Image (cartoon, rainbow, N blue to C red; front, side, top):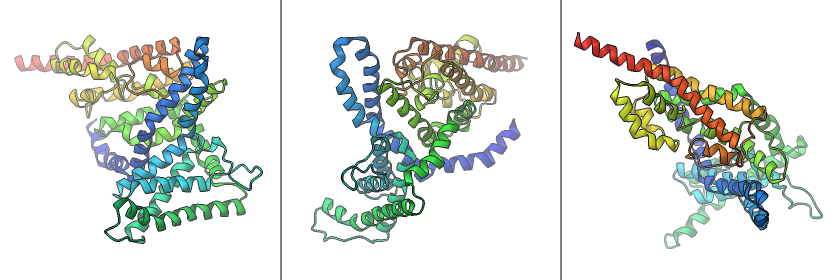
Length: 423
């Protein structure tokens, strides 16, 4: 075990630290975080239409209202992410985030295919604005913002006198970088449509996004990603933050597609979504540490520090916050807890995947706050499924069962050490 830790410290930690601090991944992560209130609003609208409005005829008048809310939030997820990511990336460079966000949207609309009606252009399919256009949107936001930042830092801008109001000065400073960024997007779009008879959107979706989404729906890949997140945590790195851009890029489109299908009265098609992990796997936080807390209460007698930390961490753990456990026990670099902390997410992912794929529980389609307690989150994420809530609770008991032998070993270790001291 010592050699393993030394190997990971030498080779894994530096790479993981670089990934966690990579400017573009941080911008994507912050971009998704920035739009979360709107995603929750859209999901709440879908949830109401599929539960309260469907169950109680009196509330039928809310169906159209909820549809409008969904259209203005969840259904244009990519458009929101494009602005938010461009804004976050520019702020990371200490440049004008508002200008970068607006330029990113303009560049994205520039590359978006149009449905031709009577006019030569101007008809945009809403399908290009939802999560199916996510990879294209992220790529365009990053590239257009990079062009904006590079030109701005090289002072290729229109300078205004100091007497001009700051807002006006910033607007004029963004003129040249904005024109260049949008024209680059327009030129690339024209070349692709001319020489390959396709669009940038179709090119990226067919070669990158669709294969990744297909890969992400495999039970093996879902298990590996959930376990990899805990591997980062074990070495003191914020695994959720490091993998958040990847998880959102792969699994948020699946969540949006399921929500869209439910909104239209169709069956949800994806088994694994972004919220799937929150309600079935991260029970009490990464590593299902609520199960660890329960296991400590059940199996620890001698290690008073374990019990005290668990008592303090329990209120946070109920709401999926587990830093007190990770750094208080600690789980970080704890050789006894290494195995259960890594394998528990994989086992829980497998159980939840099989239950969902078999139809035992419905697929998740509602974005919920990640702090939702165990069972309640699953109930809400599946539109009110009692079976989903029961599955989440069953997974919690599975987590307790996995952790229990290891905390008992840790407790016995303390008991043996006390005996040696007495002797």
